[in-house]
Length: 269
Image 1: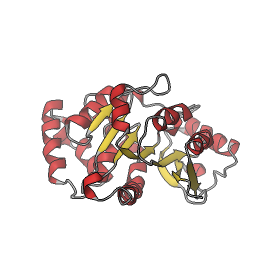
Image 2: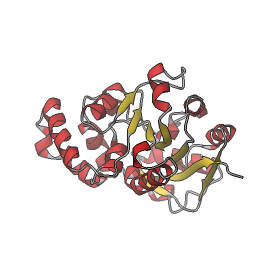
Image 3: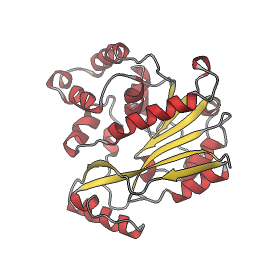
Image 4: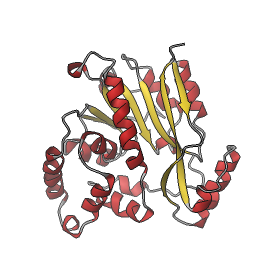
């Protein structure tokens, strides 16, 4: 599914997020920054349906890696501050244990009073375990739903989920993952997803519709994700966007991947 898109598999297999930020910072990776206010509002609106603060539905972040979206959602911190922290000379010399101890304190001090439970799903076990260990995730799962059904633990967790989020993972997962998730939910579920314009989200939209969710998207409003790694990747993106009927002018032609935001909620018609 990734076509000519550069892969960064190695940065998700490290025991902490330093390599992740060191690799992506020069590429001006920014989609979690754009998602932060969107997910925060969606979590607030979704919680309002469930009877108050003592019955808040959990958020499931799909392809969560090191818990970046959870950090931004539940803490008074920005993506720029996280990038500065993990690429700083002071952090570079720490052991993973020392970094984790510091991160526990760092995020605990910035925890928002309106924080919501966040579960993480990612096949990269080191990444989700780090996010769980420092308190960014309330539960973490490494199920590969492209290949198998949810584990008993994930199925139990899905009973508490009211919001599913995604930033960037649309290049790596398909409707199979969403069918597996929605087959185990128990609450009304919303889905908020940022998806690169180089891939089609329509198969997932159809899967969501089969579970009673209606999806909206404003194709005129795009969100920059990151700079291209090289000209080859840019050519791939321009061709992929055109193949899907999009216009790369002013976006991919200017040197960055761009995403669309899809919001899916129960169809009340």
